[in-house]
Length: 341
Image (cartoon, rainbow, N blue to C red; front, side, top):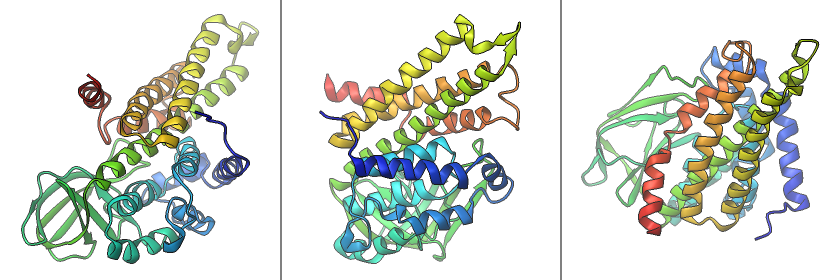
């Protein structure tokens, strides 16, 4: 398998890196954290660039690209802790509708998602919901960006249902989250009228892609932690020289780099194959690598890495939060073992 990027893919990656370095810098992230958790100006810029439609077919107003291109964008979003509902709307909702949505549902919702006019989210695993004649009842905990979404999608067994945010009987209760860059809310439904928008094997593929996209974000976060450490240790001096010259620091940085590059190969490979097992493996390794690199970044910043002024603590919080999404490493390893053995 050739993991080398094409010229167009490198251009997409570099454009995303350049835009987000300016539009989602540390000051912008902290401003969003002190507000709603979403940078509306940034979201508008993302929509204008057409990124929301990256993996949506051209017939529905998208760019008609594939998982590799979306992975490259999400990697940069993970590096810059992008405070926008891109992951929930694009990596979850648009992905689910594109893979498992009915023709009518795709025609109805994908153009709005591709333009960024519609914000949506997905609860992929909602077994606690009861379905009766296309009406939903029950509670779903910790739904990503539920409070800011205009459309909520719920996967119950092998079917997907759509509920507008203003539906009668729907209550969304935001709560304070450990990772302030990603807001969540508990959702309660009392006999809420829902639209069945998809079913079948496409749901499993959508879940595999969602895990891949999350792994791409975590890869970006791990890379940023490494870059922050290299920069800080090159500038911080002890005993008359930069601490980056100390052998112990060099070894820890080298270990971070090896883990990040290993993860990058796995994520890029999974993006080309979109194999469910490879995507699950990528998410497993990404969760552990991101958590390790974020912890090392705090330690190698020598006591200030956990303070508000420094970025490592923000990545550490996101690493902890995302490790539980779409399957923990322990759960995914068990699934991989059952499938392979």
